[in-house]
Image (tube, rainbow, N blue to C red):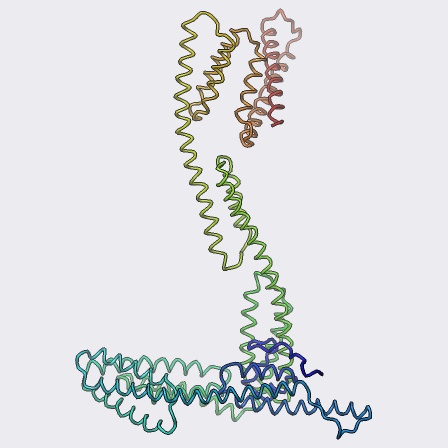
Length: 593
């Protein structure tokens, strides 16, 4: 092995192997589970954690186990050299892992030296800060101006005192006595003031109730040894940091705290007495939890289930870690099994997360394209026939599914604002068009009146060019409101009469109408579709009329033309067939657009 060989990937605090969690329960067994490279990675991790003052025991244990494992490794390598003919005394092996360990040990020693140097300086600063707090408390004693503010400041100073941290050992005892002396003096002063005393009693009751709640939670935790240790901290705070409560609550609050304390003490005694039985039960509990993890692994994980399955797994994981000790001869096996299942579950879960991420990004791309489409419609200013498309985009938006959380609000806001802008602009456009059409109506009304008057005032027929100019002037004006479209029929009726009077044939007149209609809707797909629909309806209606008339003729035994009724029916049939032919021609023209 080369001395420059790189170490494997570092073990992170939330590693897949589950080793870090086990350290708190059984250090020696946990480190025994690691191979040499894992020990090195963990060594590097804990010295980089920033808690140099807490890791000495772990470093000593890692060093002991590392030396034992590396010694075995070196012995195995020496045996290989001896098998190849070398003398064992002449073989001197120093592995890259040993060199890495030495470098980490040096780093640890430097960090430790630096830590204690800074700690001494920090202790001096803490001493200064605590002396300043004592001086502040001394100032509060006898201050009558604002009693409530004085008390609130006192509570704040007490809280700051406990947060400051250690001072130099040689001065800690004297400092503590001085602090308590002046705190006592303040309480004496406090008791002389009824308002302040009531405030203090109320605050102490509130804080002691909080300690009772914490103790009650500890009493039901699985790991009784850890609960017992934390209980001692609560008792220390009860005794040293909090004062008395109102006499009417004194017994009640203490009994509550005592009940929780007794429950934890009884559980500890029971644990000590029945330790073997309890750790066997813990083993059974852990095995049941492993079965639950296997069941989760066998469950199909998808985007709808991932959140629940992940929560279930985290609950099982927390329970597994917090259960407590198991028999030593089973510990390695149960933790190996757990970490393998954990690795398998993480692999499956991560695969699902990748799929979800991919789907979220695909959804994001679609929604981005929808925002772009709405934006392009608005920029085009052709809003009139785009409402259906906007509504379709809104429906698709809802059907797509979620997108990455960080884009969710931004994209929805952007899409919503653009859709609202479209409808706002469309409404304005419609209002503008309506106003414009009203003006067109007035112009056409004047033109129709002018043509009618001219026709009445002259007996001569209008020249064809003049009729064409009138026709063009009419359609140049533009559309009128739908509720006033009758004026178009009045004009068509009048202009058709003028064309007929000038000698133009009906089929030519119709062709002129058709061409004019086509020019009006050219380039507007929605209007073209609508016009085709109307034309098809008219064609079907005329076909039905022709069929009805032809059916009526079949009732006559001898349908001769000298019969006035028969002549009328045949004339109507011919007229409708001509009209049908014209409409079919018009339909063909429309379909070429």
